[in-house]
Image (cartoon, rainbow, N blue to C red; front, side, top):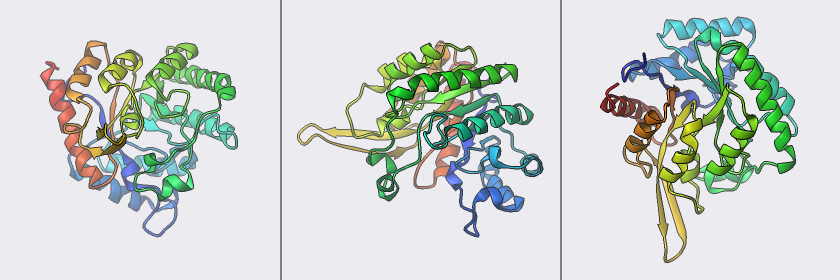
Length: 306
């Protein structure tokens, strides 16, 4: 039975990035580098991680390196409730088939780590303008091609079939200007996929940080929470000056941002949410904020009598 104390709440390891101390890719680094980074997480009282491919892409590791990774994970006393793919869309025009194969490999690897979710989405690599911005979301990025929507649905169903065979689920991460870039689009897409092993990752933090009009978070969550099976959770400030039309936003701990997560998490529980949480944060001491957010979520869960 899930309780406030045992509910899976992981730290997203994207805080460390993909560059090793020697300048190479972290996937090629000695396992001692992985261990030192995991140890920083453990020192904050966090005992679960999401090894996103924005950090160590497990799908790209050989079988022997996977076992090295598993050994380090066990040695540091950490577990994995979810594995996330980031900016590797299965309908990317150049790399879609490769990304699809990687998603299948993660679906095969996930049960061996005890993970119940493989998270993916349709976001693609940041543009040069996004990379140069203070916050990448202040510049426009990739926009999904409506002509590829049917292909996206077919490939997600394929992943869903594989996930069901392996006793896990696929979650689709909401992200602006993709097929699931608004609550209405996300619900329409998941309805068209129509697969019991596929749900939504209602990462509305990706939306409230944007400098564009949108619904209030409470209204947006009401639409998508019934379809949620996993949750990248983060918060931002959000402000609009009606005199100039200027927006502002910045990352904030869950407790202090624009989204009232106490209200939203309790509503999710009412609707039957039982998926893992994966805490994210950009800027500042992201790991420190993630540790605070983890405890905040546990307190909210406890307030629900769990």
